Amino acid sequence: MLAIYNTLKRKKQPFVPLEPGKIRMYVCGMTVYDYCHIGHARVMVSFDAVYRWLKASGFAVTYVRNITDIDDKIIKRAAENGESIDALTARFIAAMHEDSAALNVLAPDHEPRATAYVPQMLELIRALEKNGLAYQATNGDVLYPVRSFPGYGRLSGKSLDDLNAGERVEVDTAKRDPLDFVLWKSARPGEPSWPSPWGAGRPGWHLECSAMSGALLGNHFDIHGGGQDLQFPHHENEIAQSEGAHGGIFVNYWMHNGFIRINDEKMSKSLKNFSTIRDVLQTCDPEVLRFFILRAHYRSPLNYSEANLRDAREALNTLYFTLRDVPPVPVSLDWAHPAAARFKAAMEDDFGTHGAIALLFELAQEANRTRAPETSGLLHALANLLGLLERDPEAYLHAPVGGTALSDAAIEGLIAERGAAKKARDFQKADHLRAQLKAAGILLEDSPQGTSWRRG
Image 1 (spheres, rainbow, N blue to C red):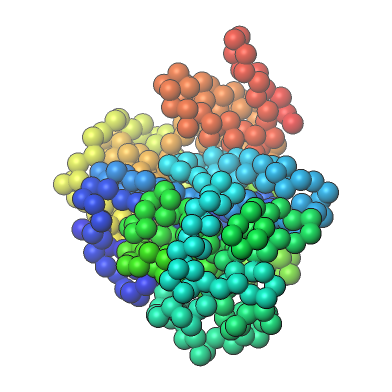
Image 2: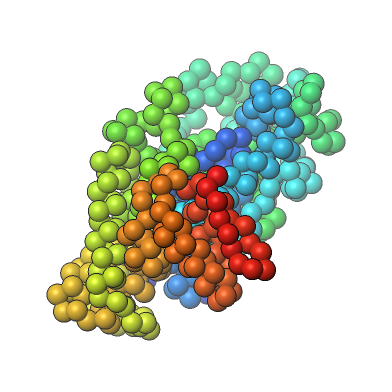
């Protein structure tokens, strides 16, 4: 039976869906003011593995991952660039989709944008106000009185009395309490705004996710995920808003992926060790980065370094060499098979991709020893459940590492693979291959005569 580590309970718990056979899952997505970094890659890939496994387990999954397209950082960056907010967000949403496709991340079932859900946000504030959990400050902002919500801090384990206004919350003289957070920001000159009963303004960041998840999944759903950095205050505030407005339980299982460190240091722009996904993909195959992320358990710290990426490349090569040397035959997954059962047990134990990948190497050893195409087929089928080993082995093994250094033959191979995917109506794979080529600087032009390419 699937067990999930529930951050709220601080332990693994058997997973019981609210509705038999159905799962509703929300994961906090990106704020689109810049290119996605490798911390975002970990969120994308980790919860993609969760999504894939839940679907493979027979659940009907509704997966929502939002886009924050209005925020202080977005407004500031657009002003610095001298471009409109719409142009800025459209550009970085497109870049995010390219990065996601390159990493073979499946699209969520819904990808709501905050600006499309302002009416639902206003309804949420009205419900909070009715329940005595919203007040308008002297500066026009509408705030949430944290101390009026019993149990605030239970997700993060933080006591209100331990939270220092000068350290963890912004001191604002318009607040009744320094811990109170913004639900609705009153309009500032030159900033976008929407009409509301409290005057023109825009939503607070925390409010956006409560409104979008409620609109698409209901006021009570199964799984809420995101990076560990969002546990406090963002997810804590989501609980306060959603449960404060509607009563009852907001989410049954809270999941948080661990941090990424760079050469054993915290990733930070101030330390100049901040890497975007597309920076990394200049010198790293996208599948290697995906493999690198999945080889660690999603909750564990992950240390990014060139040496660790090289090790991941060599390990992934080993699996592809097996598929090349012992061509797989298609197999139907039988979970009673000892190796498949161990793979399933690893994944059922809080989505233990690290254990599942270790099993893949055992199968590779066996396939190389016995030369059994059925064993290679099982390796291939199980890896595909993780979004791995989906490429032709020769095309993968002959693809240079990142950049625009793909050989003509490798480019033609990937184009042929894309053509086969389109013919099979596997458009997601075709889009992924196109994004992979684009990440390597190869631009495709489709016509009735076929596909031509050029180096960008």
